[in-house]
Image 1 (cartoon, rainbow, N blue to C red):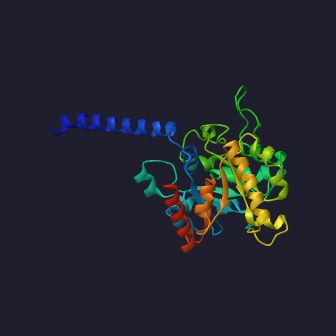
Image 2: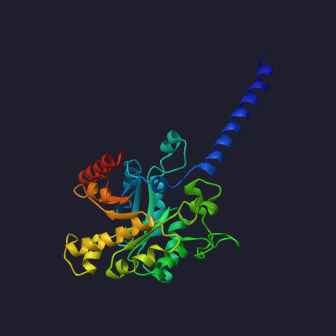
Image 3: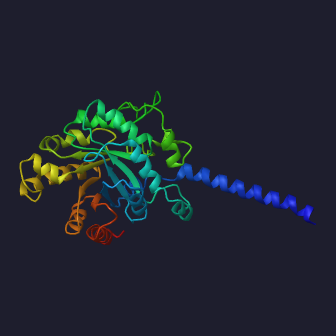
Length: 313
């Protein structure tokens, strides 16, 4: 009897493996890996914070924080690619993958690089993306040329005849760690910029932090591949000569950028807190940070809760 059951058992196992393989294959075709992009596509806000603590403990804490994204800040901290790699390892939550039955991280990691133009952008973007980040935040972009360099640095060269060939990509191919971290077999195809490539899983976050950037917002926002425009109120106020972002002139500049984003249907981002998050969401901001890290502080958690409540998320 036992020998007669073996073929049945083997057939059942083969069928289970076939179903499992088909499920994985379908997931890789249909699934959106970048949760932040999925939210923006559905016109839902995405909530995150800036992370300066690169410890594994903080990585684990943030991976289960209830946030949608984090920005690993290496503009105001040392640019250390190995620390990014370690942090992403710490954010890898196997139980969440199992329970969700999805490779999509619950909290998507981006990296803010220190360079704002020139050759350093190309090298820093390449290294940040090669270890597995889902996009890069570019500080203090002042004009369309700098925005285009940011976009080109984030893209692989496209195949001849591709509809989205321009802006031509400059990123070199060696994404071994990113392939491992994403867990997908077709990383090269997925690693392009949304919404230029509708199926792309990378996000280029362009920061406006100077009067020049505000003045040139129409040209900057028109560069294909721009995913999010992020206003930095603190640096913007300093560049405008004001001690506080609460100055009416600074707010006027913020509204100019927001208006351009809304007109071009490009997601607009800004820093918030528990006092401002509801108003900013009502104005039309769709990608907001709710605080700094070290785990979620009471204020950051309050801002996140308020933002989710007012947005229905």
